[in-house]
Length: 305
Image (cartoon, rainbow, N blue to C red; front, side, top):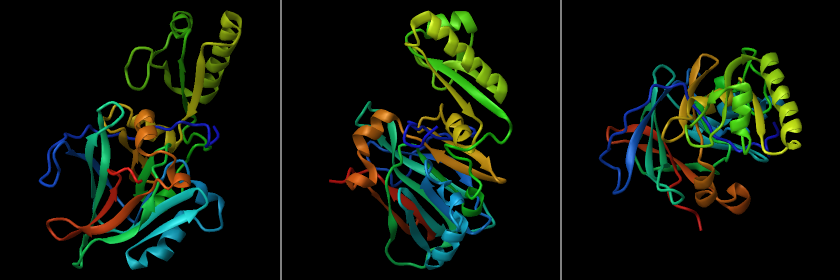
């Protein structure tokens, strides 16, 4: 699927975290543990999920770019539409990730205002240090080890395990379900997609073809959308986070847990309008927590003017 076509939602194969209030959460906000990542390379990357595999096509993979430039503590990496921030982190321990959630202006549900990652290193003192800024990728964000993300299979990747999922939805979904079966997939809501998961790729494509032939004869090709999603890291991360209140999840990439974060399309449209092209970018900083340990913060609570 072309990057420009996919409306993205991202991430995790995670036991659901238990939301709890933190001391520095402001009125109307709550903080939620999203799990832990590891960075055995000693470099942690926060990047745009729709473009994180871009550097695989260049002469310098993401880990090389990140390692060359993160010696000062952190750096913003940008090549065209592909953007990421890389920072130093501990290589020998889990790195806890949490999000401070705010009510969405779209539907009042929780949405991420601040993303925080404990880096497992002491903070040298002083105020927060700016690392750069990032737009909110409509395809979501990924957070993980720089070297692991070198092999991340993205939007145009292929299944690692030969499996795929099939989903269908639309005006004639009820009739299609009566004819072909299928169960609800993703978030459960009236009219939500139905389909099948974990099918051999050839079987998944065959089912999609059968649905296409059926809708051509049933309604002249209108009123039913069908998608075949191969088991890329990107898709599995989206699938893992579909039931999470913040659309966040963990998928294993090259032996490392990687967190992906997706956005509700309505919330994204109202809060993150236009991304980099319209100046909608949000600061990434390095600072400290109450224990004097280094923390990466991405603050996206305020809508830029």
